[in-house]
Image (tube, rainbow, N blue to C red; front, side, top):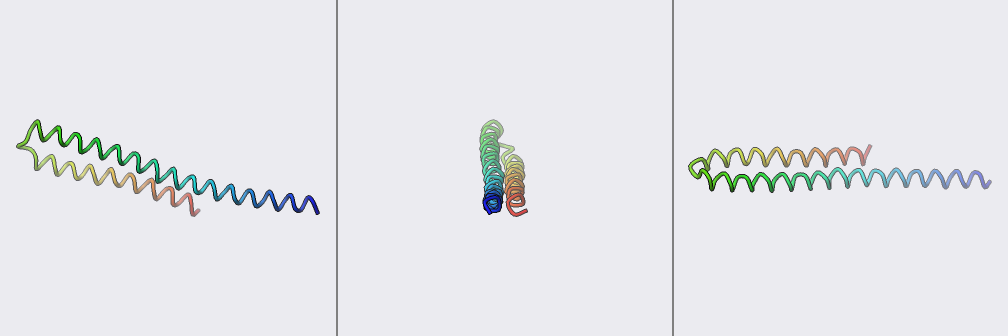
Length: 90
């Protein structure tokens, strides 16, 4: 009887550990993705400001490239979030 109770307790701890691991995976996937995207976007916009102040006549071309870089940086965040969600639910 005691062995059966210990087995049930270990199984419930294992399930709780799996749920905790999944939550950590979601937090790491979304959190690190957000940090990386924030740093990347800050660098992009900082460099755009530098570029436009050095060559104002190229403002339109620089702005187009800026939005492309912004979109790709945000896509990387969403990849991390999706990977965290997949790890959480599978």
